[in-house]
Image (cartoon, rainbow, N blue to C red; front, side, top):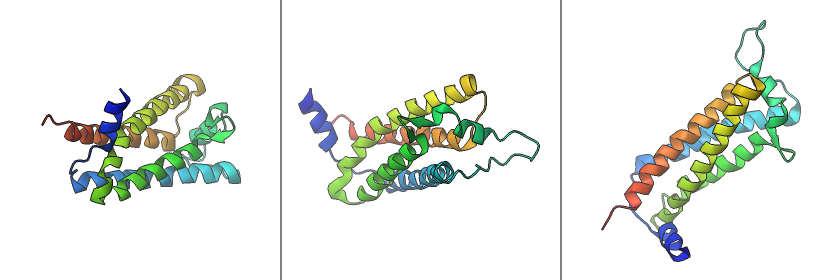
Length: 159
């Protein structure tokens, strides 16, 4: 089993350049999104949710909830680390010697989608408000999972 996992991770295949560019762009958008939320968290700066003055700032309500941290660490800070990893893998994979790093995208993006689904569930059913920045991150994770699946299928073409 470990040998099969190792051979999958180290398997290298020529991946379309546009997919790698898409990975980096998704990572940059996610990094900007997570960075803004992390900045707002640590500076106690109100989050701009693009709502009218008389409407409820749902983004701020979500960010102030007990679900916005995991063991005292803001979820948005975890997002920064995730998107930095995605950007790094995307950039490094432009070098042919490191194509194999793209194999790490599928498990990490799958975990990100599951985490995003959990957070979206909490927003809708527990907190009762949606944060547009959080939804953006969940959508980016889903797109990244789609790209990762496409790469996975290219890697596992029967020879």
